[in-house]
Length: 466
Ligand SMILES: Cc1cc2nc3c(=O)[nH]c(=O)nc-3n(C[C@H](O)[C@H](O)[C@H](O)COP(=O)(O)OP(=O)(O)OC[C@H]3O[C@@H](n4cnc5c(N)ncnc54)[C@H](O)[C@@H]3O)c2cc1C
Image (tube, rainbow, N blue to C red; front, side):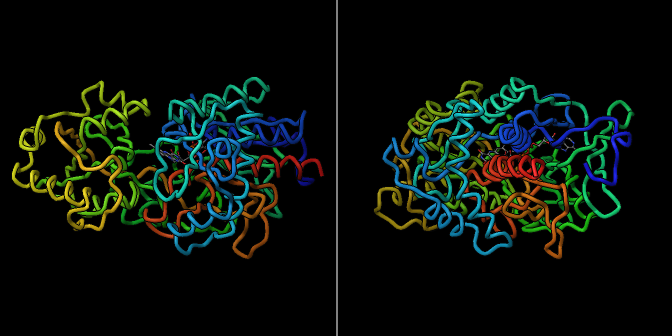
C-alpha cells in the first residue's frame, strides 16, 4: 500500500488486484500467488460470468522448446521463434517484448500444465500462420473455453476471489503518480479497493468504436467478432497517467467468420487446400498469407465470400477441431456433387466457379503457376464432391496498448515506471507489427495474454515481498 494512503481510505485491501478475469488476468493471479504464497490476490471482472476473448479463442498458445515438442521430435527454440515472429511482424515498436515472450514461452506452457493444471498438448495436425514448426499448444478440444475454465478452476481451488459483475471504473492514484488500487462499481455502489500492485488484464479496445476510429481508422465500421468487454479502459486510464503506448495501429482480424452462424471457420480448411471466392466465383488473393492478412483483402473488396473445399478437407478438419465439427453438423458447410451444383447453391456464376476451381487445381498439381503465387495446397487439388461455407471478415482484437518493460510494468512516455501498475494481454502492447492485420502470427494474442500475465504476476509478487 502506498504510504500516502491508509487502510481507512479503502473499503477493501489486497496485495495484488487484477482487473479482468480472462486468460491474462487469471494467469497473473495464479502466478502472483504461486510466487508469494499467502499473499492476498483478488480479481475483479466486469461481466457477471467468465467471458472475454480467451473464452472465444481456440486456445492455441505458441511456445518454443517445450517437452511436448521434444517428445514429438520438433526442433525449436526461442531464437527460431523470434525469427518467425519478426519475419511476419516486420519492424515495430516493441521488439524487446518479442524476445521476452518467445524466451518465456516454454516455461509458461509447462507451468500452466504442471502448476495450474491446464490440459494442454502440442497441436500436430496444423502449424497455422507464421510458424515453421509445430509450436501451438492447446486444449485437446481446441477451445479457449476449456483453457479459461481450467484457469478459473485453479484460481477457485486456491481461494483466489473473482468478483464478477464488478467493473473497475477508475484507478486510485497517489498525488505522486503511483497506482494504489482501483474503484469498482456494482449496482450503483462504488468500492475503493486498495492494492500494492494493480495488474491491468482488461484486454484491448476492439469494442470501442471511438478508440478504433482514432488508432485503427480502417476498422472503425468493420464487423467485430471479439468480446464486448474489450472497451479500452486501459488506454483511457493510461493516457491520464502519462503512460507510453506502442503498436496502436496493429490488430488481428479474421477472414472467415461463418455467415450467419457467427462461429469461426478454422483457417485449417484453407491450409488443407481450401480457397476463398468472391460473389463472382473468383479468387482474389493468396489465401496462405493467413487469416488476419486475408481479412484485409476481404474488407477492401466487399462480400459475401465463400470458402470452398471438398469432402476430404471437411472431414479431416472436423476430425480434429470440435467447433468446426459443430458447424458441419449444424448445416454450416454445404456440399454439392460438382462445381456447377455448388455454384447454384451459393449463388455465384457456374462458369466462373468452374474456371476458378480448375485453375486452383492446376496450381496445386504444379501444372500451372498460381495467379496469386500460392504454393502450399495442403491435401492437394480440391476434387468433387465440393463444400462451401459463406464467410465474412471481422476484427477479433486489437494488438496495441500500454508499453511495458521486461517485468510487465507500465512505462511512462519518458521511460520511467508508473509505480504499482502492470499490464498484459490486450491491455499491453503486442508483438504483431506496428499497424494493420498483416503482422499477426497465430497465437500472438494468447502469448501476450498468458505470457505477460505470468510475468506480471510473478513480478508483482516479488515487488511486494521487497
Ligand atoms: C474468436 C477469437 C479467436 C481467437 N483465437 C486465438 C487463438 O487461438 N490464439 C491466440 O493466441 N489468440 C486468439 N485470439 C486472441 C486472444 O483471444 C486474445 O488476444 C486474448 O484472449 C486476450 O486475453 P486477455 O486476457 O487480454 O483478454 P480477455 O480474455 O478478453 O479477458 C479480459 C477480461 O477483462 C474483462 N474486463 C474488461 N474491462 C474490465 C474492467 N474495466 N473491469 C473489470 N474487468 C474488465 C473482460 O470482461 C474480460 O473478461 C482470438 C480472439 C478471438 C476473438
